[in-house]
Amino acid sequence: MTQTIIAVVNQKGGVGKTTTTINIAAQLASEKKSVLLVDLDPQGNATSGLGVPKEQAAKTTYDVLCAGASLADSVHETHVAQLWVLPANNNLAGAEVELVGQAQREFALQKALKSAAYDYVLIDCPPSLGLLTINALTAATTVMIPVQTEYYALEGLSQLLSTIQAVRGSTNPHLELLGVALTMFDKRNSLSEQVQTEIENYFGEKVFKTVIPRNVRLAEAPSYGRTIYEHDKWSKGARAYKALAREVRDRIG
Figure (cartoon, one colour):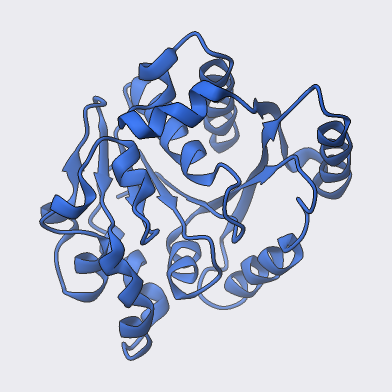
């Protein structure tokens, strides 16, 4: 049985959600923990970011949710020791429609993960609050929200928090907010500091102390199918994600 399932969620795109999921998963795996990354985004960026050819995957998240495939037969090894991925490609875009007709459609992912024997499962959610994200929130034990330190950072977060509250009231009463991670921080830009203050005032102690900087090496790594630790382990981005992963581990306890 899975120890911890973390849904990494923000309905806004371009906030560093996939980068955060990949690099926290890789760091936890480096600490001798077994980790599964579930790619729940039809874009499949987490899949390709771990070097798995998403269009060549025999079975994907879609097959697990909609075609009765088992989790064990669908996960792929990655080049990172102790880290597996349930891949996704654009077939997953049809899952929202197909799941609508299923009984208990919000529980499809939860049922699939019941057989998972990993220390951690991280779910990279799509940039929307549709049925796939509801499945992630229903399956998760806790939620992590990456927020970019840019203009309009808080836009839409009230809707996300309302969705989390609605899931608590219906399909997953034990769901908790693990924390809010500040991403794309540019210390040369006073706006980043202003947004940081605004988010800290709003979320208080739920904001992780580690801030992820805007970093060229972080942006480059996915195009090579690598984690930031493989691409440039001495970069500011690598050091930041290593520290953030330790905070995640400590909060989980």
